[in-house]
Length: 112
Length: 116
Image (tube, rainbow over all chains, first blue to last red; front, side, top):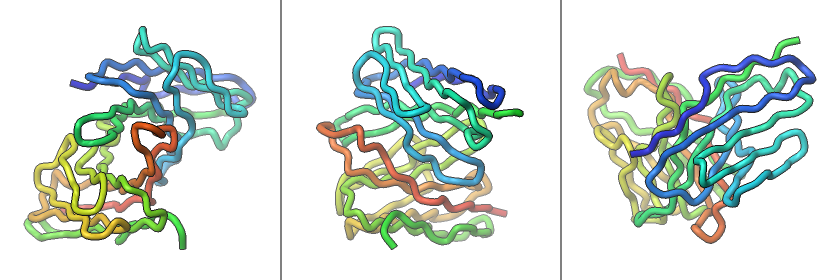
């Protein structure tokens, strides 16, 4: 089976740094995605990790440890518009093609 | 317009009725996907398609039917709607293959379906 765990909710202050963790246990692993989803909108792609280590993209960074089944998304210089749900998803290549299995998401609230 | 679109955006139907949700993408992406999103469950894969005329079941396929006669369209049909199928449905497309997974999946705006 596939098991992906994220905290349900987090609260942080504007201008601060927040780390959203994701742990996974899946049958097969070919990479890990992070998506952002604002309320009532579609998920949008943030980052992709396939190798261990940190990938940095502006204010957002994502880290992966394959041996530990662990990833985190780091958001710096938080802005009010960063209030959204953050979805961790494991990418697997199966006999039928490529698939994403999503965690339930972490609802981030940014406060003044 | 370029991109991925879904129709209708909102739909209310009655139990037992057949409903078809449409998905159209203009990128000529090979892969297309249907997800449902419910509180407490996150996004769950219903069906996916690797190319025209190739479809396969995802995690929660029961009660749904798909077809893909053209690369750009991937309709999802609820043959006999039930209240448990009340959800937000997202269509997605991807150019990804195992050689280039980093492109990710691009999601449509979603269809909010209510079954009464």
